Amino acid sequence: MLNKLYRKTRYFLLKLFRIRDSAHSIALGFALGASVNFVPSFGIGLAASVVLAKIARGNAVAGFIGGASFMMTFPFLFYLNMRTGEFIFPQDIGEAIEHHIDRNIEMGLTLGKTFFTGMLLNMLIFITTIYFIIYFISTRYRKRILRFLYLKWVKRKHA
Image (cartoon, rainbow, N blue to C red):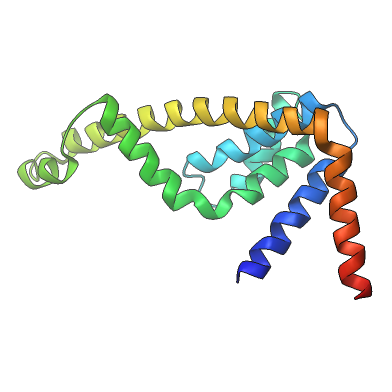
């Protein structure tokens, strides 16, 4: 299983750094594409990643790679959204559900506000962080990473 994850990571890195575009466009597309995974997209996340990257004038392929590479982290990101929102609007969600069982609409709005606030804050932090990381790596280490991945790939095929 770890070998499969390693191969998939290496494949995504190879695809990402082979894109012939500016470092800004690649970093923007990847960050926006990956950030779609903070939102419950109900199966259209990859398409939304590409569209969002195109709208922001980022690279669409990088947006697709970003969306695909973080797709399996959605349950963790959902939990993170709730915890971040709960940090902004302190409340014990478990206790609130027990005591307000007859006020479903109010409880739904409270949980929605908590989730939405956490989602926006997490997306803002995530996009900013990932953008600068990918931009820095693209400008400084792109050729070295491609050479390293290529040499590892060729060695493994001929071994």
